[in-house]
Length: 112
Image (cartoon, rainbow, N blue to C red; front, side, top):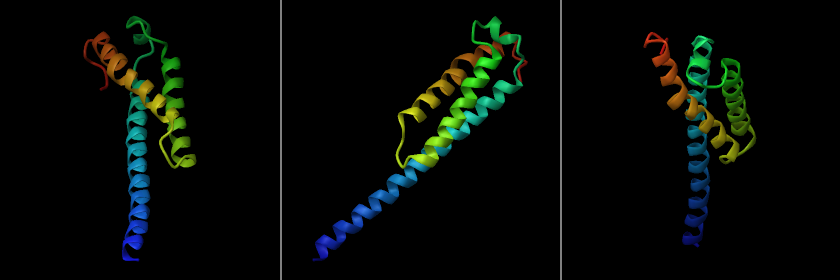
């Protein structure tokens, strides 16, 4: 009897840990996406075509959509969604590829 009771408690504990870990990951994703969006807002619009990227408005739409998708995933799903991973991938492309190129195009005098 005690063994069955401890197994039931382990299952409940597992669900709590999984839900907490998912929430923490989604919050981290959301913070990264908001930082990328704010960085994109503060960049000069004429620097985007110089680096061979999408326009500033295009990146603002992608990054803003990423924030909205992650917010929707955090409120509607109890587990990670493929859409949240797609949103963080788009944000990672901006942060790791476009942002450094923008900084180099503005002679290192960019905001970030």
